[in-house]
Figure 1 (cartoon, helix red, strand yellow):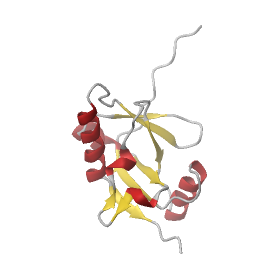
Figure 2: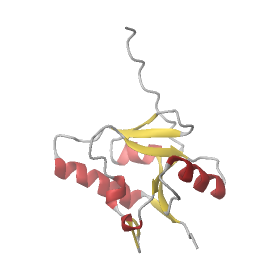
Figure 3: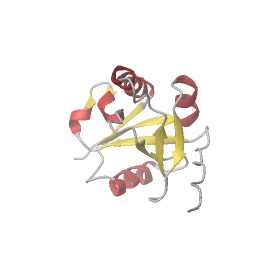
Length: 130
């Protein structure tokens, strides 16, 4: 069996979005930290959205989710690497998919703190589904 290749890191200048499909993960201030929680430690699923138009971002979210996305939190790869110490790796297919990895799995309180930091750094984008 051939050894697994090293993961490909997403370029630090890229923006990614964490799509939200449940309204209870959104509040008046933006995206709640629970939307950024990675309970299994296998990597938080995100989509690379740099260079996409607004309608293309929402279409991407709808394509990867379980119905229409109600919101998303946008972050810059280099920001979470520098401020939190997480890495973002390419995980295709599907196209533009990535994983945020490097979570502290040995300490649940620290894990929660990381999710809270991501939520605080994220630029919320809420969708009107009228």
